[in-house]
Every structure is written in structure tokens, then in C-alpha cells.
Length: 81
Image 1 (cartoon, rainbow, N blue to C red):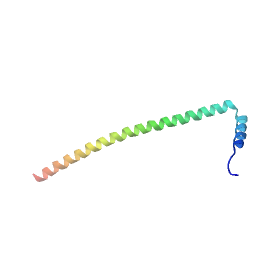
Image 2: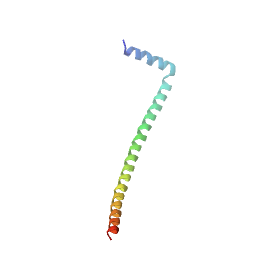
Image 3: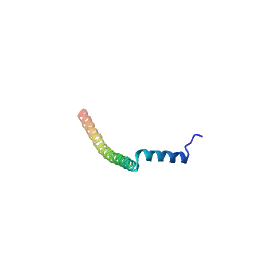
Image 4: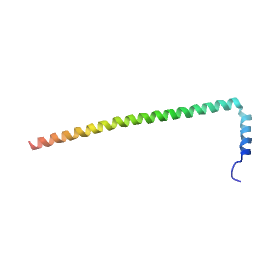
């Protein structure tokens, strides 16, 4: 009642093949596959770049906190003197 049977899918596929032709459908399939492949590649490159940026960001924070502590200690020493 609500689902599409296999025969309905076959009829739709035959109509699409008759309208567009196999050569054009092959080209569309290749273009779509290339687009998906390019998208996956871009996403994996972005993830690698993000990980590297996070590592770079974490390192200066640790150095900055160390510098803040040493400057705090210096200011305390000046106050005591």
C-alpha cells in the first residue's frame, strides 16, 4: 500500500534510461562519484589541519601559563622587597 515494489522501481529505471540514455547516465554517475570522492578528501584534509592547529594552540597556552606564573612570582618578589 505505502511502499514501492521492485516492479515499480524497474519501470522507473526503464523510463529514465529511455529518456536520458545510458551514455549520459554513465557520465552523470561518474560526475557524482567524483564529487563525493572530492568531498571526502576535503573533509579528511580539513580534519588533519584542525588537529595540527589544535596541537599548535595547546603548546602556546602551556608556555603562556608558565610565563604568567613567573611574572606573578616576579611581581610578588618586588612587593616583598
